[in-house]
Image (cartoon, one colour):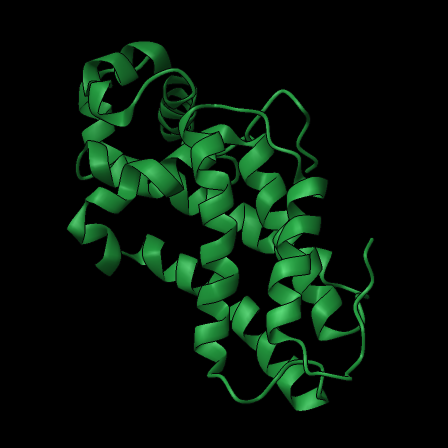
Length: 215
């Protein structure tokens, strides 16, 4: 699914879920596009979905569990998209560039997802032991695998731990996007990717190794 410039999220709750659950998930996504999670009540979710409040508790333990399930569906969608985007890309640095652009593009075009991931769930301690967070780690493992591939091929320097280099890549992406997400400012994935790659790749590329493409 291609996202457009109007910051639209993918349609969540599809598949073999009961209609009531689908309505609840989509209602929360719609409300999150306009409000902070803490300001949204289960009564408001139920009213927006056109269901009873009791039905929310049939499918979800509580409001936070609903939030995590919504984020899980977002993550499943975007992880699959990231896997597809890397198909046919040759070279670890080119793959990293593709990952960086894709990551920034999601934050730039899907502000609901970006706000949930960057601003909403991280204040909850149980998020870090949830199945949702395990999906975040699976995504970060894609980055780690590409870095390890680059070290093995000689594209990426081997004197720094791959896990540290992953932190540099993912941390840099979040740092340059956080203000834009928090204040709903426009972001250019092409421009931010170009700038980030210039800085990051000069630090991690093996001197004299294979060069990356700039587009």
